[in-house]
Image (tube, rainbow, N blue to C red; front, side):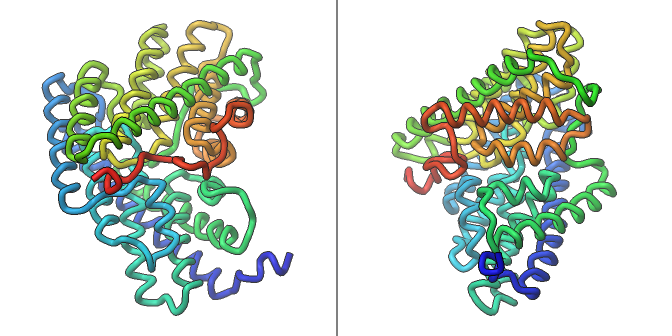
Length: 415
């Protein structure tokens, strides 16, 4: 055991914790800024899905796509998975690409992209990590600790789960994992403290309809199966569109085509805009009205919208959009099966879809158990457990480190 953790020194531990807290602060400020800019762009006074007309949706998204085109002309941007890998090594970080990725991710969130804000947050923190590593990094170990602590602290705060953030790149214990865990905890507490004083309030917390702590229904297994299938459908469509995008000789054409298709889809189904975190309330409204066809339609449309955004330069994360998709499926099941508790069904659906679509069942479970306010640990375990079985039984569906995992290939490869 001593040999396994021999690389953890008091100095590196202190560095990871302090810088993890700084990363949590930067993540909170970046997230709040992105949310405020999104409200400003849509002119909704905080009601992200408010009274936008079809023309407003089309024009706003097309303007966002034009800005992404201009940013891409300055330098290629990176997808979230590539950015996370690069952040571990500040010495080799392509600073210009990371900077343009930060701008592209902020624009994507502000103009209604069907993606989460993780890419912008990680890119901003990565830029800070390169500066800090240059100033105080005395050796390779210190500089790598700074890079990894930055990502862990930022995601530990944003996802509201230090264990989940540390498990994103695998569950193998080792010196770096221990340091990431400490950084994620520091980032979590700082992020939470900052978000409590921000106008946006509680940050990324998720609230679901009340559920009895000991609630369980065999129907949850069926919900988990359907939601896991949605996760597979997202991955299949994402792969198909990714291959198609790589055959396009010009990146600007990919951005243009993807943006136009996304704009049309969002105009037809407005709920596909944004990450889906705040829009969970709308799913509950549809559930109360018994509109299960609308719930399934929104889930299917969100799969298409997320895939289009990821392959066409709308930089962001998959986590919250997948939560939205799974929640919609769970809510539809609760409408069709009156004896099924809505909160439990939504929790099971979000866990199953996200675990399969994100390819990280353990990380998803660790994040959602702490991120969801409602006591739905058992439904979450059911959803993540079924998702884990799916990753074992279906070839190519498991493993957080599978080739092609995460987002689409960097546009630089398609130039």
